[in-house]
Image 1: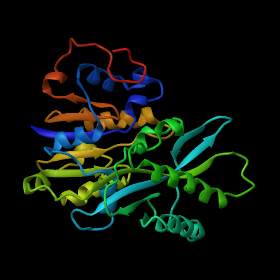
Image 2 (image 1 turned 90 degrees about the vertical axis):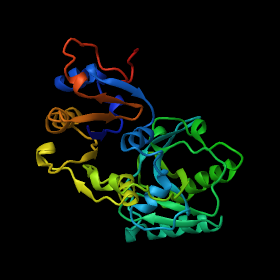
Image 3 (image 1 turned 180 degrees about the horizontal axis):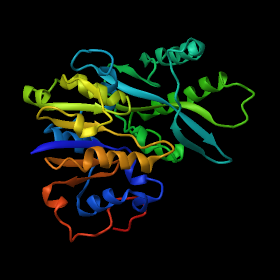
Image 4 (image 1 turned 120 degrees about the horizontal axis):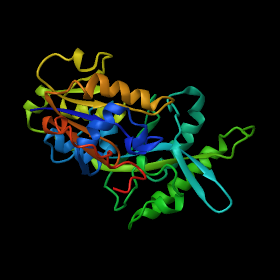
Length: 316
């Protein structure tokens, strides 16, 4: 059976919870099989892979072909809000490191990393970049999607080599502070968040995977582009007609963001154009904490009227 794998980041944290889902999606997810696992592991499993490359290598692969085995760590600028006793982490700050107006800031950050013997490689236009490493550090870096809304002290890197990276996070805050306009009324600062270290692995030795797979993106996601380049697959934009625009006998990997002013409307469009008509597919809908699988048996389980599991605040 063909696979339709849809990644919807933060779906479990939809404002309003499961009660805000479109009615049709509520029924389908109430019948679905719930799987608790991380999104990378779920995508890899659906594609028949042992694992996906880490975020650092995937970010590097999004724009550059690089040597197998080279090591990379990703960085993103994130907002940091201090109060009287804590610093709270917020969402990534959309900075274009290729903007000439930011060149003085870029120069300072590059010098900061160069002093540590690290290669600075920002991704112009993508709001992130990578650091080239000689060896992978013995550190646990909390992934970027896990840090918004948390205290800096509880998510700092941990491990034998963590002191260096904690220092660089602090130093990056000071660099950003130098270039923050004094007229800004808010007290939000910015710092670099490091995460996703890994080496670029060899591409899968299965030409059948790349020949049968279509990767569609509604979000211009750098990690999805890196995955496509690693697999040797072109990324296409998701058409307005959904599955009606598809030709050929393909498995489909689709990334569908719901951030914005109308997340419920976005989910309604996803359901109408992709999930509802996918009767010839095994549908795996992946959020941030797990997935729901919908196959023919689940679609026909009309007697099953339980509420969808897995949403924030759901006791089940």
